[in-house]
Image (cartoon, rainbow, N blue to C red; front, side, top):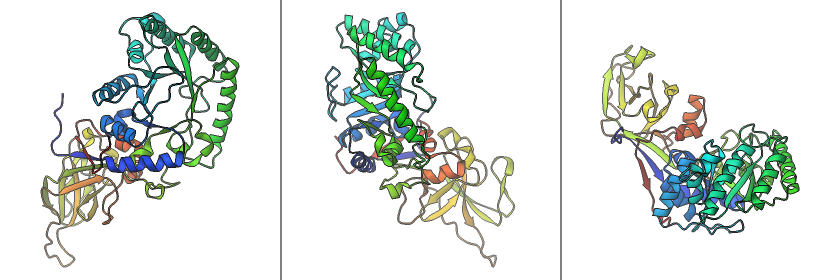
Amino acid sequence: MRPPATTSRAVIDLDALARNARVLAEAAGTPWMAVVKADAYGHGIGPVSLTCLAAGATWLGVAQLAEALHLRGLLDQAGVARPEPGPDAVPTPRAPRLMCWLAPVLTPQEAAAPGSPLRQALEADLDLSVSTTAQLEALAAACAAHVRAGGAPGRVHLKADTGMSRAGAVPEDLPALAAAARGAEDSGVLDVVGLWSHLSRADEPTCGSTEEHLERFARAEAVVARAGLRPRVRHLAATGGLLWHPAARLDLVRVGIGLYGLSPEPAVATSAELGLTPVMRLEAPVTMTKRVPAGTPVSYGGTWRAPTDRWLGLVPLGYSDGVPRHAASAGPVAVGTLRTTVVGKVCMDQLIIDLGPAVDDDGQDLPCPARAGDTAVLWGAPEATGSVPTADEWAAVCGTISYEIVTRLGPHVPRVTVSQEEHR
């Protein structure tokens, strides 16, 4: 295992996280799930989950089953109560529900076996998603074995495909899935507590896609109702839906990227315009500075050459840490009040930044504006100096989205939480 890095860190501002949560919860006006998948979008699932619960979340959501089981263990260790069993139990921040929406492919026999992943999920009191009859058969077998062992019936959310073409039952398959779910519910092994889907273009408020999703969701509700099922929790909207499509808020909203202070679509509204503050600050010390003459090639391939005698700085972050290689000669970096960029290609563990000219227009020497030990900030919350870049800026120069910029940050970069408030 690679040892933790000691020269770089991601500072996670839990106070900013809590403020973002309150802003979004007020806008939603409905119960909300904190989406903490992918290690809370790279921010650290444990501290982020506890902060969100303190801010009023009554649900926590992850994608992968292994991460859901890990999170359950963290919550148990922190003394967070498990919710009451049964389909009508109302979750609270002190006893939240935990939902997982990706499960392994198992046969009914494999699923029912002691210690199977689905048996572990049921023992951990997870809400689980189902999109196909094969998934339902496996889960029902696990639920039946769990109930025979003295456990409570499983809690299931049926997923309808309303236009994402990802997970979820298409309209032609939903009636059979609903009928099978009703049969399993009648047998007493599970309860269908939710109906849900995803919006594919919620960050494009005027394109009409979300309205189509809502129409398809309504049709899915009718199919489920005809099968005799009455899901208590309907959920469709993530951050974009919550912000720009009030009709999609339904019974629960799943709040993801906005929690972390980033806009789903900066072209529609920036984080600042939404009242959100970026939570992660990626920083590392400048490990050395050097002066190079005009024309000197920099980094692999010599794709950037010093236009004049130049001061350069070395920063111990690279693509093994999750810094995109696409940031070559473009990624913005701040050192104090100096705003500059990466120059040359991003290396595996290091990158080089331009610290400015080493001579003035008259050929007189200029001092280096930074020194070893100064802090270089790749992205974070904007400050009064205007020098600190944002994850959105990194996304723009790398041709991607802020979600990827923060989530891809390597696990060996320490996450250091800071807070002036008590979040528990």
